[in-house]
Image (cartoon, rainbow, N blue to C red):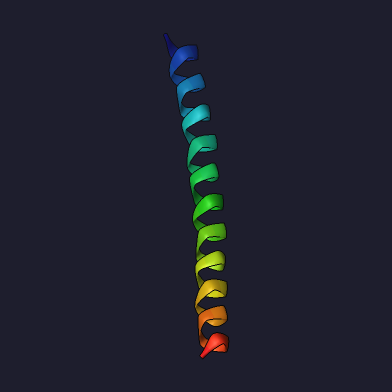
Length: 41
């Protein structure tokens, strides 16, 4: 039971890291998209 909880906690941490990474990539992409739109003006 304890081992299972540890495994779940580990996978959850990895999951949050992936979410954070995607969030950062998305933010950079959004900013790049905004800059591109301004350059088009």
